[in-house]
Image 1: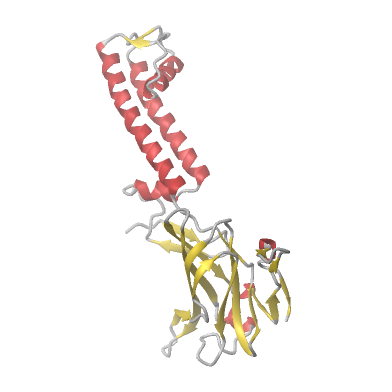
Image 2 (image 1 turned 120 degrees about the vertical axis):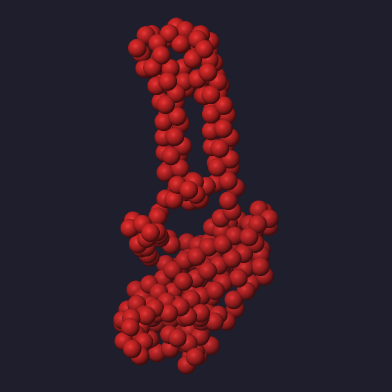
Length: 289
C-alpha cells in the first residue's frame, strides 16, 4: 500500500476526486500511462526518453576515448550527436565506430533505436486512432415544466458533421446523506429518462427526467441540491459509422449548474429548402419559461 495521492477529473476542473493509496503513474503499466497522458505531456515524455537514451549511449562512447573516429577527444557533444545519428539509423559517415567497444555499443544502440521507434510509432498511432465522441453539452441543466410536469432537462448536441447512430444516455445523481446510525453516506441513484435512446443523433438531443414522487430529486430546489451535495452524471454512448466504432463520453453537473424556472432556447430551425439546421452556439442558451 502506498501513501501517494492520485487525482482524477471528469472534465476541466468541475469535478475532481482524490485517492490515497493509489498511484497516478504506475510504471508497471506503461501503456496505460502513455495513452492516458495529454498530448503535451505525451510529447514531452517521448522527447525526454529519446534524449535520455541518447545521453546514456553517448556516455558509453565518451567513457572510452578513440572508439569513434573523428570525434574530438573528451567531447561529450560529439559523442551525443554521434549517438543521436546512430539511434536514428541515419549514419552521416563523418563519425563512425573504429574499435570493438565502439562497434559493440553502436550495435546495441541501433537495436535500441529500432525498438524505441516502433514503440513511439505504435503509441502515437493508438492515440490518433482512439475514437472520440465530440458531444457538446449545455453549460447548465434546467428544471422547468414539460407537458405540465416539473422536469429536469439536459441538452446535448452532436459536434461532428457526420451522424451518430444508436445513441444511448444514462443519467445518475450522486446524493449525500446520513444513515439511521448517523454515518455519512453517498448514494448513486439512476434517474430514468423519458427517451434514453435515439436511433439517429444528428443535431441536438434534450434528455428529460420527470421530477415526480418517485424521483430521488423530488421537491428539491437549488438550496436542497447544495445541502445534499447533489451532482449529476450523464453518460452517453453512440456508434460513429464513419469510424465504425462506438464512442463514449461523460459529463457532470453540480448543484450550481442547475437553473430553475428556465428552459433552453430554440436551437434548431428550418432552412428555405426545408432542412433542419442546428445552431450549436445555442446549445446552452437559456430563456425564462
